[in-house]
Length: 130
Image (cartoon, rainbow, N blue to C red; front, top):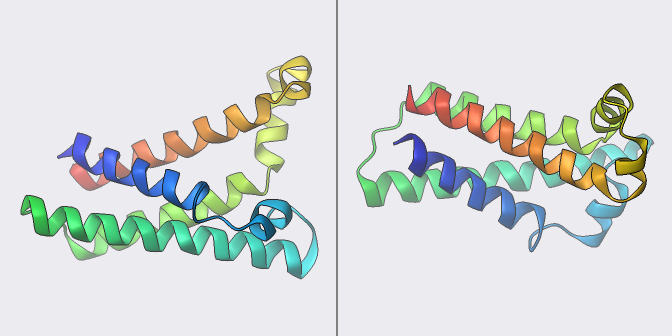
């Protein structure tokens, strides 16, 4: 079940991060103030909604009996970690700590960002499959 859950969460992540993310969210989700937090929150909420939908479809099609509280915990985890990662401060801090200024200057932050998201999804899938 781990592989199927991870796959569905990853597809949900891709859908929410690319075709379902508005230009406004992409531009402002790391910004200061109410506008930044609203863009970030709505973007994270889309992730939660899409992942919840895909887990529901997976449960119906594959006959899973996902426990309610752990599933809700996973959805909260997905929304929270996505919002924190997309504020970009942790990604920038990681790249400074890892001494990657050249990588950061040439678009590396987007790769570190996506790797952090995949790690969070992997932990969620492990938790749900355990």
